[in-house]
Amino acid sequence: MKKILQFLLINIFLINFSYAEWKEIVQDKLYFDPETIDLVNNKLRTMFYHNSSDPWGSSKTLIEMDCIEKRFRYLSLTAYNGQNLNGSEIGRKGIQDWQYMSKNSTMGLIIESSCKPFIESGLIK
Image 1: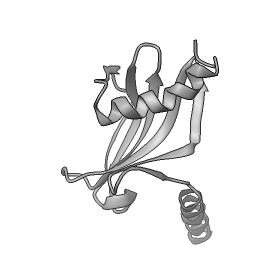
Image 2 (image 1 turned 45 degrees about the horizontal axis):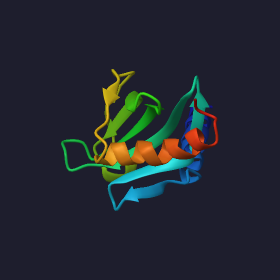
Image 3 (image 1 turned 90 degrees about the horizontal axis):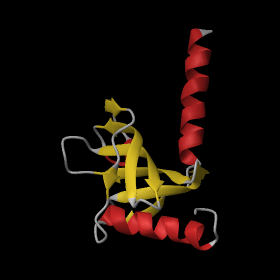
């Protein structure tokens, strides 16, 4: 029974990950899943993953963006020792403090382009 449960849990995880429609933002480095974009309390939330040359190989983050105040924060972050979210989990963090973005940074450009349609449509005021 224990082996069957392990098999099912592993397959459910793999099926969910394989259906993620990760879209490349920065070649071989930064991706997001447009299916995870959500508007909560006038703030956008979406899932990103990042391949890094830092001590960890990659990380998956749920980011909340405050389009009006031009800031963002990580709601969750999980780091892996392999690229593309492979390998062992090597770290995990919860909600972080708000950070203000610089307009020409990669995160600044991502937030600006993510927020624009929501602001223009009046969904974010």
